[in-house]
Length: 217
Image (tube, rainbow, N blue to C red; front, side, top):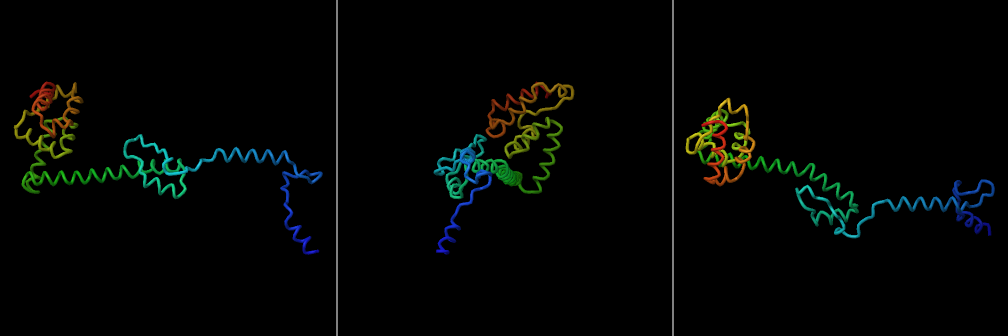
């Protein structure tokens, strides 16, 4: 009998003080109901876990990459919410993509130099030609144009043809350079693949004539 009473006393639920009437010790149902309603409101504001990886609607409007189904599946298995998945993609766009693009650009630059070394018959000859091209470009071209041409194999070869007189040159005149009228448009035209890659005769002639009109030649 005593053991039964002891077991029964251990199973009695203790009412928290905020839900107990201080005078009678009885349960305050209104306080309990209010607390339950507050808990429901808090739970309703928590992010709803997706039912499948397909429910991840990731914003990749930056255009750097698209959502990956395998990545989404692995994040889903880890219990990631939509907000957490979006944070992962945003971090990739902010940190990893620029690093990959920089590495790709460095690799491309190395390959371009290799092509130039081969085109000019070796490292030593290329070094000499590159010094001549730099001096010629600084003397005869606006800095923006020189920078644009120097960024690719095709651009360097176009600069080489200018230096050798194989296409009309551009001679910078101090009085015209001060105005800079139309220079930005022509610089943009020289970045067009029709100029430095395709060597479209009509397009090249148009660019050359534009610079000659501004700078003389």
